[in-house]
Length: 231
Image (cartoon, rainbow, N blue to C red; front, side):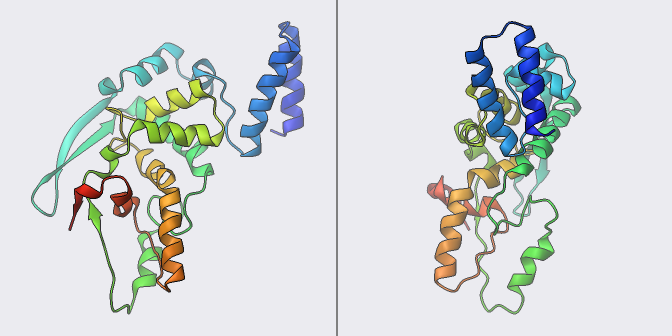
């Protein structure tokens, strides 16, 4: 919807409810920031529930007791150890998929990040490494669990969302105060959290004539947990 149309309708409805001009201007100022970034305008939890088409109380339970909306299982890793997967149950997965498509994908990550980015495949990454004498790959331990909810809250706040909205979006994307491995939102959120680090790495590589193809953000977690580095 065009901003002028949205603003006109918003003013009319707000004035019909005898809302003060001060509040109207405050809400419109907030909404315009989100609209300018092509992000969905969300004022609070009730508004988010309406946009999602689900019961507000049910959404409240999802965000405040997420442990009841996941199933946990383990998969075998190549080194023989097991990897924990926390998969959201269908209703929460639908909410997270909406957040991913309607919010997260509209915020660009590093241009060098190839993983978890729409319309970019592993082939787009590997083609830069053909015929190279040396290719360095670094894997790091417990990447998603190391990205705490505070980083995710900062991501939503930086988009322009108010604190109550940023908090509920964060809670819907986190489990045990960190990113769950298995949620559709975790991967792209990790790209956004690592944006500045990606830029720092890419600038260093470019200045030294190294092509900085960042296959996946889990290769960059040294910035957060250097002591967990494993080769």
